Structures are given as C-alpha cells and as structure tokens.
Length: 278
Image (cartoon, rainbow, N blue to C red; front, top):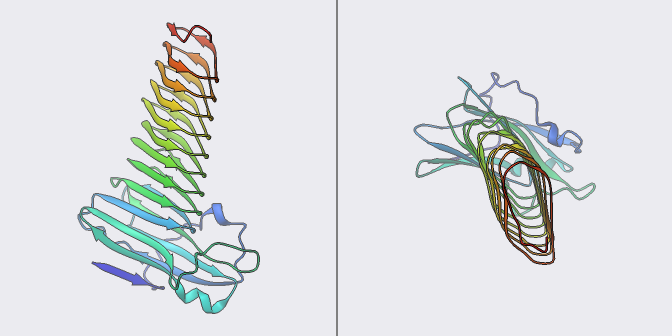
C-alpha cells in the first residue's frame, strides 16, 4: 500500500503548532500539508525525515495524523514537497521528500523544506531517520533515532531509546533505558535515564550522561565520555587517545585498557579497576 499526496483537507482536528525546531527558517511561499496515517495493524512507525523538520507527539487516544506546511523560496517548487506512506512488513514507513532530486537543504535564498507535526497513539514505537534535518519525539513507548548530520531529540521516552549518529547531535531527555550503537564525530547527550545505558563505540565525538543506572561503553577512540550521577556500575572496554570523566557513581568503575588517553574520576563509591598508570 502506498499513498502520496500534496495536501488534503482531512485534518482540522490537528491544531498542534509546527515544530519550533524550524521556526527561524524562511518561508517566502508556503502550502499546507496534511495526512491521515494508515496505521492498521502496524507495530512501529518509521519517519524518514531527510532534510526536513518533524515533531512527533505520542498521546493516549491521539489520532494518527500529520499536519504542517511546505515552505520554499520558489512557489513552483511547493508542489514537489510531498509526504508518502507505505507498509513494509509490520512497519508503517512515512517518507518526507522532494520530487525531482533537489535535496531540500537551505542555501541562502534558495530553499525548500517541510515543517510538520505528527500525533500517534501512545502504544506505537517511533523510529526517525534524519539526514540533515531535525526531529523531536515526545512520549513514545520506544524511540529509535538514526541521525546523519542533523539533530534529533527524544523526550519523556517511556521505554528504550536507541540511537546512532554520524556528525550530528542527539539529545535524550528522559528514557527507561538507553542504547547508543555508535557515535562518529557527533554527540549524544542524555539525562534522566532510569535504567541501564549501553554505548557501543565513540569515535571522535562525545557522549554525556547525567543520571542513569549501570553504564557500559565498548570503546572510545579520540572522543570522550562524561558520566555523572550514576546509580549503578560503570564499565569501559577501551580508551584510545580520548578520555572518560566519571563523577558521583554509586557502584564501581572498571576501565579495561587505556592508550594515551585519560580517565578522570571522583566520588566513585564502589571498587576501582583501572590500569595502574592511570
């Protein structure tokens, strides 16, 4: 099933404001964009955001719908800014795109993008794939973000937040648990994670966590990790030329290997297991 549309007069019931993430962008020419999402028996909703801007609100009893506007420096480009939905197994894929190959990025007086808000019932996990755009998801039971050079925010996530970032940024503000697959040269900042946190690898970027349970980090290259107010144990597999800073840990701190980098700690109540020259 595939539905592509430019606009439809379906959704007077959606009165949420457009995302603040894009409020400062130009909008010389604009046109409304609205879509009723065909959830059916889908178990996850995936938003392919690309270079556009999206806010997703998960609420009990909320309609599955999108609303917002397309903006462009040229009126004749508006018709090419579209939303498309399709099923892929048990996932509903919602794609935001521009027909005809233009990326949608803003270059001074030459730009085209969409600024949308979506609402979903609060039982559906939400995944966002962000290129150079921005996305914010609030209140989802499970949240996943794959970010290239853009920015994603997960707020008040009730269960797992799972992330991966290249050169962009991800902020997690409240989650049940956190899994960071990898960080390239970008950054992941998290706070108020109630359960465990697992980070696979950090390249030249950074990871910070304020408030969480057990923390495990596989490897740190030339980047860094800053961990504070941890109620469990902290385990780091390896540190290359980067560093890890740990403050106020109820459990222990283990760092298995350190190259030319640094390990800085204070207020660790449990056992310390760090290579001796550090």
